[in-house]
Image 1: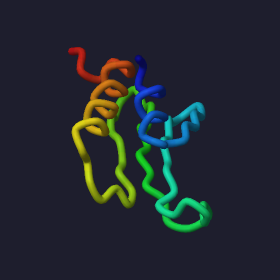
Image 2: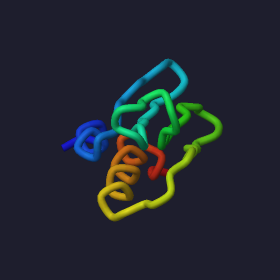
Image 3: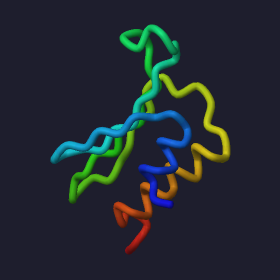
Image 4: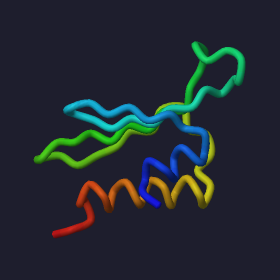
Length: 78
C-alpha cells in the first residue's frame, strides 16, 4: 500500500501540484468548506519539509502514512 492509499483509508483527500502533495480532511462531514485537517509535503530539492495545519491528533495510522510519504519522497535517504 502506498502513502496515498494509506491517507485515503484515513478519509484524507489527495491533491498534488508541481511543488507539493497535500492531504486534507474536513472536520465536519456535511460542511466541507469549514475547518480542515491538512498535511502538506513540499517537494523542494533544497528544503525537505511538511506542514501540519489543524491536525489535532496524530495516531499510529496517521504517523505510518506520514512516514510512508517521507519514504516515497526519498527524504530519509542520505
